[in-house]
Length: 603
Image (cartoon, rainbow, N blue to C red; front, side):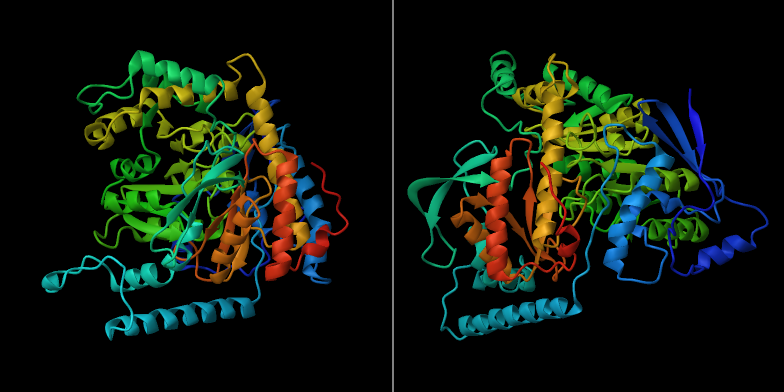
C-alpha cells in the first residue's frame, strides 16, 4: 500500500536565500482569477518498504527544487562558508534522508559539486587562448608569404570561386592548435580496453601531421574507456555466448529492419531491456548516437517546444535541431531556470505562430559525461507533472552504473519508471557492446517502430553484439544464478567514492557527484591538456584530456572514467602519479582541500 508523506512548509534549513524575482509570466499568472496548473505536486518513490508518495503541503513556502542539494546554503551569515558547509552538509543530508526515506542500499547521495575558481585564473585562461591565436595567425601569415609549407587539406585553386567547404576559423583551429596535441588523441590500441590496455607506440617527426609506428607496444592503466562494469572482455560467459551466436546467426542481416527484419537475439534483447527498465516495451538500435539524433525528430515537430539542459550531448542537440521544434536551453540542473522557461512558454506560447505549443518535451541526461554530475530527476519529474509536459531521459552513462541493481538514475533516486515518458540509453558503456535503446509505453514504442528513420536506412544490431548485451544484462539482473553483477555494481560505487575523495583531499577541483564514475579533474589552461596527456602516458596511465570546443574555453580538464575492473592497487597508482604531476604543474586549484585534511578515506 502506498504511504503518503507530507512535506513541512518550513524545513530545518534555508533552501533558497536569494531574493525572489517576479518574471513577466509570474505577473501574468498572478492577475488571473483562476489557476491554470495546480501549485502542489507529488513524486512517487519506490523503496524496500513499499511505494511512498512525496508531495508538497505549501507551494509558497516550498519550491519544486527541494531535491536539489546544489541550492542548499547555510542559513547563518557568520563564519567562513566552507566551514559552515562542512558542518551543515551532514545534518542537511540527514534531514533529507528522514523526509525521503530513500533506498536502503544508498542511505546518502552525494551532492553535485562545482567549486568556483578565481576570476584571475579565468582571465589567465583567456590570455592563454589569445596567445595561442596570435601564434596561429602569425603562422598563417608565414604560410601566405611562402615561408612555411602547408600540410593541411585545402581546396584547389581552380575551385576558389566555389562555396568554401571549410570554415576558416575551424580550419585554423584544427591546423594550428589541435594538430599540435593530436598525439594525445586517436591512440591506436592493440588489446581489449579493460582495466589495462596495450597501445601501439608511435613517433612523429612533423609535429603530429604524420606518425610512424615503432613496432612496440606499451601496457597502461586504462582510465579513458566507458567500461563501467568491466564487461569489455574477450574471455568469460559474455564473449563465449557472443562467439557461439555467430555460428548460428552470422554477423548481420545485410538489410534494414523494415525490409528483412531483425535477428532473434535482438528480439530477445528488446524484451529483456523492457523487463530491466520496468517499462511496457523497448526498441533497440545499432548505434547509440543515432538513437538520439534519429528518434527525437519522431517525437516533436515544428509545433512543439524542446527544453534542453545546456550540457546535453551532441546527439541530443542534433536530434533537437532535426525535429524542427522550437528549442530553449536551461542552465545545468537549475530547477528555477527550468520552471521559469516552462511558465513563460505556457504563458506566451509559440512566438512564430502566436498559438500555444502543442507539446513540450524536457530533455536531460542521467550522468553528464563532461561534468560528472547527476541530474535532479525527482525535481524534474515534479515540474513535468506540474506543467503537464513530457520527459526524455538519456541514461547513456548512468544505466548499469547507478542504482543498487544498475537500473540507472531512476533507481538511484527511487523514482517510478512510469514517470519518465522516454527512457533512452546506450549499450556502449556498462554492457561492453554497441547500440542503444528506447523504453516507454507500448504506444510510444509502436510509433517509433513505424516512424523512425533507423528502421528504413540503418542495419539492425549484429547478432553477436545483441548476444553480448543479453549476457551482460542477465548477469547484472542475477539471471545467471550468481551475484557477479551485484559485486561489479558495488565495486564501481566503491571505486568512484574512494577515487574522487582522494583527489579532493590532494587539492584538485573535481566536478560532479561522488557517486558518479565520471571524474573531471579541472586543469583550466588549454596548454595543460597536451602536457598532462603526454606525461601520464609516460607514467603508464591513459587519461582523456578535453578542451574547447567540447568544454568552455576556461574549463579544460582531464576526464577519468572509473571501472569495476579497476583494483585498489590500480587506483592508488593512478592517484600517486596524478598527485605528483599535479604538484609539478601547480594544477591543485581547490580552496577546500583543508575540509578533507583530517578525514580518513576508506576503500
